[in-house]
Length: 393
Image 1: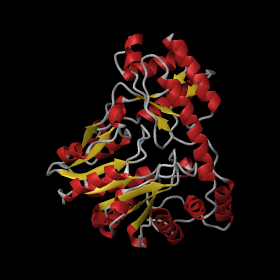
Image 2: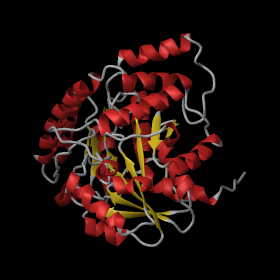
Image 3: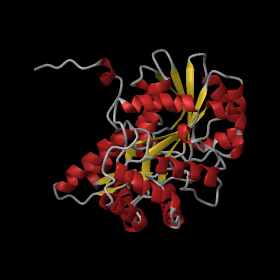
């Protein structure tokens, strides 16, 4: 039977990261030894204090529906986190709890973007951003950046990308896939651009906020430009910093009217996130925070190793990421050496011949690069380098 699908299906592609992970799982199930540099999640276990809170919630009968936008306890914990970490005050009606930061972003785009609208974002960017925009019948507008810029767009580039059809500017810092962080001076220059375009909202995806290296401070636009607060939506979650990717808890904070519209979208799609995961997220945000810096120390050590090892290889150049757990090496020289027409071909060659998985850069809006995750142990990173050396030799 031939099925007729909605046109929105043709407007987006399957997740490149999930496709690579699925291919690796198939080979591993077939008995192959796979070195996985594609993972978008910490390799650490969820801290015991968080798991214990979930167990107590189950035993305490917290297994029923909650309010669509999250339990009062978790909304209060999120408000406390913003006050503690960012010196920002939010009321409960300005917070929405979602099934992951990805759903928070999706709700936001569904509430704010429609046919004829566009969303401006720096590239490289997380591969899901453009397709989430396309699913609204809007259009993603990518601002290309380079290694020489440390993947940070200039204020002039941002200003030139904004049109009367622009609804949202989307920023992600630290960034997936390149780990770049926006500095205070970058954000202040962007704020000045936004003041000249009063019809544009800003969405700040801060999911990697706590994973930062070299003692670099974190800033978002709401902290630095309080006059723009009525136009700013912050997206965050517990997945990355607390090793809780499978728990699926993210959140949004912003103007009450926009949060209410996002709440309406969620009420007719997934409704509330897991009640048990919400109890665990309360513990993550309110209890002992020492697991976070411990994890960051390990990530920083791995970053130092993998960036130097990649940058020393012929045909590959790599800049040091400021945060997250990815680096984004340029591999065009290696591609040419190996006869690969695209970074997708290069990634397939690595998987087929070396059983090494990376995510190609094209889905992130930056051809000629690959994303390497160092959210794995040092032996896995070292073995991957050996395999890569073997291929290039």
